[in-house]
Amino acid sequence: MVKPNTHLASSAAATTSKGFLVIEDLVKAYPTPNGGETVVLDGINLSIGEDEYISVIGHSGCGKSTLLKIVGGLERSTSGAVWLEDREIRKPGADRMMVFQHYSLLPWLTVRENIRLAVDEVLSHLSSANKQQVVNEHLAMVNLTEAANKYPDEISGGMKQRVGIARALAIRPKVLLMDEPFGALDALTRGKLQRQVLDIWENHRQAVMMITHDVDEALFMSDRIIMMTNGPHAKIGEILEVPFPHPRKIEDVRGSKEFFALRNHALNFLDHHFSQD
Amino acid sequence: MLLQFNLQIILLTAQVAWQRSVRPALVRDAVLLPLLGFAGLILLWWVVAAFVSELMPTPWEALVANLDYILHPFYRRGPGNLGIGWLLLASLKRVLIGFGLGALVAIPVGFLLGMSRQAMMALNPIVQILKPVSPLAWLPIALAIFNLANPSAIFVIFVTSLWPTIINTSLGVSSVSKDYLDVARVLEMPRWRQIIKIIWPASLPYVFTGLRISLGIAWLVIVAVEMLTGGIGIGFFVWDSWNRLNLSSVFLAVLVIGFTGLILDFAVGKLQELVTHRPVSQVEA
Image (tube, rainbow over all chains, first blue to last red; front, side, top):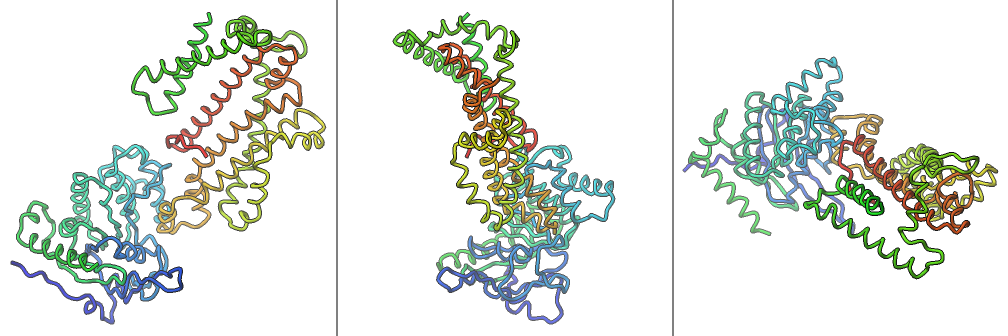
């Protein structure tokens, strides 16, 4: 039996020299109609390395998506701050590209044009030929060269999310933010796409922050799992280190004793917090 | 001959229905049921004609009386004596000019209303008050301004075309999915490029819905306008036929107007598919 390497979140971030991506004392509260406020996220402290893959896991409504949106700049925190390479994040930016749960592809553009739109905006200094090359590379990376001229309505959910991932990676973000990227897919497609994304990441490591509610997915893909307590007043309950070395093979991971130990630990944590309601 | 003519109608209808809606599973749904519907309508006509025999022609009598019109739609037999094809084209021309001008004004105005709260506050009351007014009420005003029948008819169609397009365009612009806008924000797209690259294409289906409704109403209104203004056109043909107590021609005109309306709607739908690359939804406001 392997004891999971865990520690409390509050002790992790009290450092003076900031890391790559640092979330500091972050609080998010929404005003309520009767003049009070609902605190969704209450004091989040987290530091992410520049080639680290982390998952954030928790029950629905624990504010994990809100946390991701704040890092993405799409929402503002009530207090506290997020720092990327010692710069405070105040607005959305292409250095923190999102992969959306429901793909958010533009339906009037083809697969190729969807990726090209992002490349045109962010890599505007490149020549047209170079942009085209970037688009083609990323189409090939997610095996969508064949479907490049199809419209989003004409392809499956798994293909749509591959477009979303290609679009995000094509603009070379410093941090990749994924909001339940496989949540809307069927189980078979999900497994295949997890494998593909992990392959891509293992070949081009970078910082990834992924929201998920699937313990297996988090264990299979990430280096650390951030487990959130239930909202309101959600905090980081526990951080789970995932010790499996990269490149990972899903059969090896699934077959190992550590996997079951970590999985049970995570599920117990989630069950415990669920029954508190 | 009668049977042949009816079959043509039914086949055309079935084909249009086939292309417009979910593909029917059976030939029965595509051909036999519409056939049954038309047969019922013709039967009803026949029954009514049997009771009001002095004015109402039976379907058979109407067909015989209209043979000349049907076989020679584009004859010219002296001033004012034109085939029904010419009359139809004259009406279509008025509608398309009025509708085109209306779209040129309504789309930008609708876009402005959707983008700006102030513009919405300033202009929405005008739209809401003028929208329920029958477009025919504008005819005397138009006649006073233009003093001519044709520009007045076009003006009425222009006014008719405004409201549905304005309302649907503003709705489309103001309800662009937040997901699309989030993509633009993450990509740090400047506002004016967001308008061109995201908001405009995202609201196009709504614009087209507005255009379809506008064109449909314009085609309804032109018949009434021409009844009042006279001149060359399918609407005046209806009124003129009634004055000559020639109900057979009225029935023909009803059929022609109906088919033309169907084709116009179908054409805008096709254009929409071509422009937006998305299937046209059957939902209409």
